[in-house]
Figure (cartoon, helix red, strand yellow):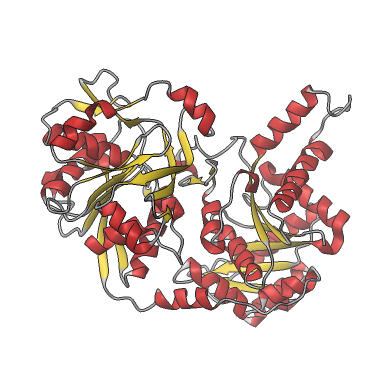
Length: 545
């Protein structure tokens, strides 16, 4: 049978949980035995999310194949426990680039190339190709942005065209927000009514309305939405705020949302297998003990507000490992630019993380925090930049290289501990997207009798146990300078892992006889953490904390 298509759009405001809703739908249908693919359509002209400031659009999610994508792709991976990649991620920049390339190659045979139909045709082609590549029974397509924005109108037009052509093969789910003004005390339906009216003006009638709110919607509001939005009351689905996003699939399943979807697209209601997910969700409840983790970063602030999204994958990975250990994670966000050991910001902290970062801003604050962690034997986990700066801190304060630095910050540093490796551009073109960065999955051999080795050994993760090989995702431009490897190891630094390609340094550690847990990884373990399979290094880090 040809695949079915479920379009998920959003209304009223951005960031309301459209991606979580799409992932929850996909999980429920996958749990009923259907092969699912998830697709995200982004509005921006960027080719990918790699060059977007994380403060502007959140932490780019890195896929196994090296594609830098929107955070929602990470949500799909976590919910479905399967990898997504380049074919699952569509941006308007990609679409226009391909359409213009085809026009220049005379593939339209002299037609005047227009947004409709040619851009829409390219969108539809990519959606169908993704479903075909993943051999999907059902494709769940999340339309970025909010109904009514001019940037995403062509995605909506493409969905309308597919509905006309394929009829009962395509349905539309609209996720909208119902605010509860404090002075009124009741959820208001008018914003959602207007959002659906915008959809109707584009020729789209939603099959379902999923209502995001801080309260559970009562029958009266469901009936009013049904009346003004031309849907059945039973097709108005409650999706109130939950303790965790992982509760959402269970909330939707309790309303038989997946069964209603299957009925509309004429697929059988196979028996659902959701016990592992339910057991996991139960395990996250009623946890009273906590671990306090300081994250020393520089992408927290936007205006007068702080962001979680800038480090979304990291915070998810901490939660996954914390629940595994029956601990809640209490994160303290510290702006690296303002950090000074004298201000006691790390008082009563159980562990310290320095995450991904770019450029010189805040570097000295991060290095100061690493010194604090090393000297006070506080468990430390350095991720990417956090690994590079840990190597620099060790070189400065243990190996006596006072001016040690990364060439990213100081190109003429006396001791370039982190540098650009010879012929970097040539081999990166052979191995990764981007040209100047090491991206995506790289295999790494881990040294026995190290913290990292014992972590993977105890909690899983080796792709080859006999050769101690793991596969991890990378997103960085600079490398550890092997010219200093001998000197630093003689001073006590442990190089615990090297890549199978080019023999690049992937993991540095301090021996446990010196420090309970001091580990830095050039790769990003946070991108491979799943709720049912927390990453071994995060478990070991939190266990040490």
